[in-house]
Amino acid sequence: MLHKYAVLLRMKWVEMFEYRLASLVWVFGAMTQPLITMLVWMNIDREASATFILYFASLIVVERLTTAWDVWELDREIREGSFSYYIVRPFAHVHWAIAENLVYKLVFFVILAPVWLVAAIFVPALRLKLDWGQLALFVFALLIASAIRFLFSYSFGLLGFWVTKVTAIYGMLEAISLFFSGRIAPLSFLPPVIQQLSFYLPFRYMVGFPVELLTGDVHGTAGDGFLLAIFWMLCFLALTFALWKRGLKKNQAVGG
Amino acid sequence: MRRNLRIFREFFRTCLVEELEYRSEFLGNLLSSLFGIAIAILTIQIFFFQTDQLGGWPYADVLVLLGIFNTLQGLIDFALKPNMSRLLQNIRKGTLDYVLTKPVDSMFFVSFRHLVFWRLVDVLLGLGLVAYGLWVKRYVPTLSDLLIFLVTLFASLVLIYALWMLLMTTAFWVIKIDDLSFVFNSFFETTRFPIGTYRGWLRIVLTYVLPAALITSTPASALLGNWSVGATLITVVVAGIFLWLSRLFWRYALRSYTSASS
Image 1 (cartoon, helix red, strand yellow):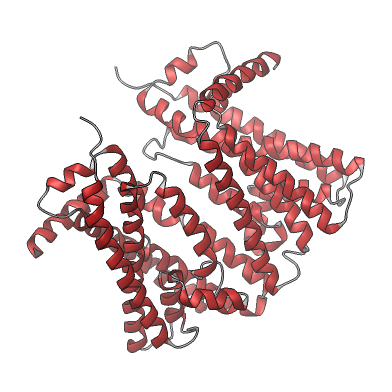
Image 2: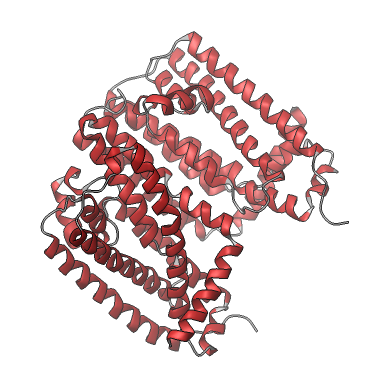
C-alpha cells in the first residue's frame, strides 16, 4: 500500500510540473480577494492594522493549504465518462485524488513558506509569537481543516452521479461560506448572529479555525473548536463512504 | 465605423440564436446572478456593521458604486470574456490566419465575435442597485449629473476595453496559459470599493498608472452630483490614450505573429 502510494505521488508530482505555470497562477491568483478585503479593514480600523495583516496573511496560507478542487474534477470525470477508467484500476479513485491534493499542497507550502519568511523581515506584524505547543495545535487543526474541505468537495463531486450541475450548487455554498468561514473578517468583527452560526457550521473549521490558532486569537476555547472540527470531519467521512457505495451502483458510463 | 456597427449587429444576432438553443439554462443563470449580487451587498453590510464610511463614502454611495461595478462586470462577461480563450487558442493553433484574412478589422473581430447574453442580467441588476442606492440616499440626479455620468461611464468602458486588449495581446508571447483573464479580474476587483479605501503607493498606482480610480469611482461620483468638468475631461482623455496604446500594441503584436506549423 505504501509503495503504491509512493508511485502515485511521484506520478502526480511529474504531472504537476507539466503545468507549473498554471500552478503558480493558482497560488498568486487566489491572493487578490483576501488582500483587498484586508485593505478595506485596515481603512476601517487603522489602529488594528497589524492584526489584520497577520490575520489575512495567515488566511491566504491556510486557504491555499486546505483548498480542494475535487468537485470540479469529479463532475467532469463523471459527465465525460473518464471516471470509468478509475473503476477498473486496482486502486480506488479517492486515492488518486488524495495523492494529487498532497502533492499540490506540498508545492503551495514550499512556495508560500519562504515568501512569508522574507516578508516577516520587513513586516513586523508577520513575526509569529507561538510556542511549539501552539504550533503543533495549528498544524493539527490545519490537517483536519484540509480533510474536511477535501471530503466536503469530494462528496459533493460524488453527487454528480445523481445531479448535473453540482458545481453550481457547490459554488453557491462557497460564496455563502465567505461569511461563515472567516474569509471576510476575523470572527470577532462579524455581527453576533453570524458569529454564533459560524461556531456550529462546518465552514469555520475548513479555514477560519486554523487561522485563529495561528494568529493566537481563538474565538471561544480551542477545545470546543477541535471537538466540532472532528465532529464535522467524521460526518463528511461517513457521507463520502455512503455516497461512494450508492453512487457506484448508479454509475452509467457515458460514451461507447 | 458604421460598417463595424453593422457587423456587430450580426455577431449579436448569431450569438442570440445560438444562446436560444439553451433556453432551459436561463433560470439557473438568473438565480446565480441574483445570488451573486446578494452576496456582494451582504459583504458591504458586513463592513458597514463596523463603520459608517468606506474610503470617505457613506453606505448609499457605496451601493451606487457597487451597482456600477456589477454593471461593468456584466458587460465584461457579456462581450469580452467569452473571446479570451478563443483568441489564445487561435494564436496557439495558428487559426488566427483565418481572422486576419477576413475583410474586417482584426482587433474588432477577435474582441467581439462571441457574446454571452445571459450576462446582461448582471447589467440590469447592477443598474437596479444603482437606482436603489440613489433611493436610499434620497437623491434625484439632475440632467447634467446624468449626462456627465453617461460620458464618464462610456469612458470607463473604453478604458476597460483598452486595458483588456493590452492584456489579451500579450497572449502572442505568453501562449502557455489557458486563461489570462484572472490577471484582469485581480485588477478589476480593486474597483469594487471607492478609491479612497486604498492608501500609499497602491493608491498612486491605481490612480495614475492603472487608472482603476476612473473606472467606477468617477461615474458613481458623477451620478451623485460630485463632478467637475476638469475631471471628466481627464477621464475621457485618459481613456482615449489607453485605447490608442492598445491599438498600437495590437499592431505591433501582429507584426511578430508568425502563425503555427510549416
